Image (cartoon, rainbow over all chains, first blue to last red; front, side):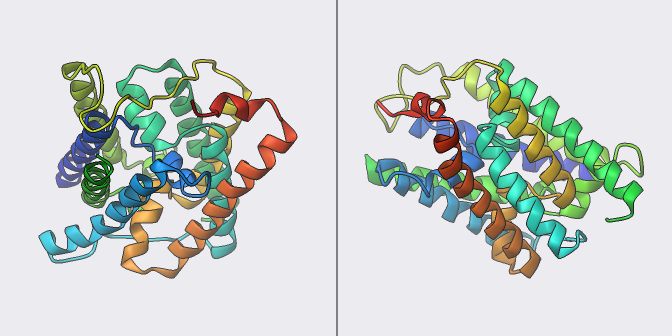
Length: 139
Length: 150
C-alpha cells in the first residue's frame, strides 16, 4: 500500500519539475533529449541542459538527506545484457524523439497523439521483452 | 536571464531526481516487476505516470502563458507525424527498457549511488545516443533538417 503512495508522490514531484521547467524556461523535461543535447551543438542550451543533469544526479543525495538511506537500486540483468540494453535505450530514445519522461509524462499531459503512440509501443514492447526473457530464463 | 535559467534548470533537475528516487523508478528490479504483466505483476509504478501526468496536465492547462517566464519563447516539439522513426525508435527503446529495467532518467540519477552496473548501462546508453546522432543524418540526409534551429 505504501509503495503506491510513494510512487504517486514521486510521480507528482516529477510532474511538478516538468511543469516548472516548462513555465520558467519553456523547455520540455525530456531526459533523453536533454542528455542527448549535451553531445550536439555547443549553444545556450548546453548550460541549462548540463545544470538539469547535475540536478538529476543530486536527486538521490536529497533523498539520502531526507530519509537517511539511499534509494533502492537492484540490478539483476547480467552485465552483457545490460550493455546491450544501454545501446538500445540510447539509440531508440533518440530515434523515437523521447522516453518515459518526454513522451510519457509531458507528451500525455499535452495530449500529443505522437506521444500516446510512442508510450503504447515502448510499454507493450518492454512488457513483451520481460516476458520473453523470463521464458528464456535470462533474468 | 541565462543565470536564472541555469538555476531554474538545476532546481527542476533536482526535483526530478528526488521524485524518481521517491517513486521507486530507480530500482530496475521493481521496474521489471511492473513490466512483468504475465507473472508476479507489481502495478504500483503506474502511479508514477499517473501522478506525473496529472500534475503536468494541471500545470499545462492552468498556465497559458504567451511566453515562458525566463525566456523569449517556448521550445516545444514541432513534429506531429506518427512516422517510422517514432515507431521503430520507441520499439527499440522498449526492448532495452525491458532487458535492463532502466530508462534514461533513473539510470543517470542512480550514478550518484555508485553501483558499477549502472555506470556500464549509462556509458553504453550515451554511445547509443551519439551513434544515432552520427549515423542517422548520414543514412537519411533529409531527416535531421527538420531539427534545424531557427
